[in-house]
Image (tube, rainbow, N blue to C red; front, side):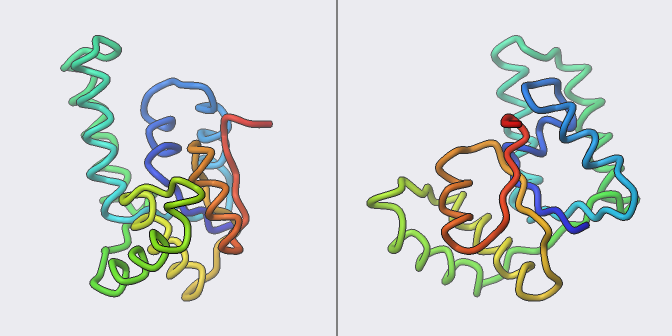
Length: 151
């Protein structure tokens, strides 16, 4: 199974939130491949920093989670896809197509552009995200979508 994780779902692997159990089950499943864009790594660090600033996570625990994430990438448990110039062009097209009526945001468009590229190159069983608007646009683009916050 190839799963492309958006940062809205990836954070659930490292910090307990609604949907964390489903994400952990996917991550621990046999014959699965977790794929993220390089952007998701940046967004994960930002999400951990926000949780620390707002008191939902202490600094020491945040550092441990950052190291765990980096180890997951280094060990190959999470496959990282670089964001290329062509992804930016695809994201621009997605913004033009969906931003006015569906509220697709810039970084979500870039994430979706990478997911669509991965779908075309190796195939995806699902895009995993917890953002309703992002999931809706991904489905409109033909991707199977799993929202870990919904049963």
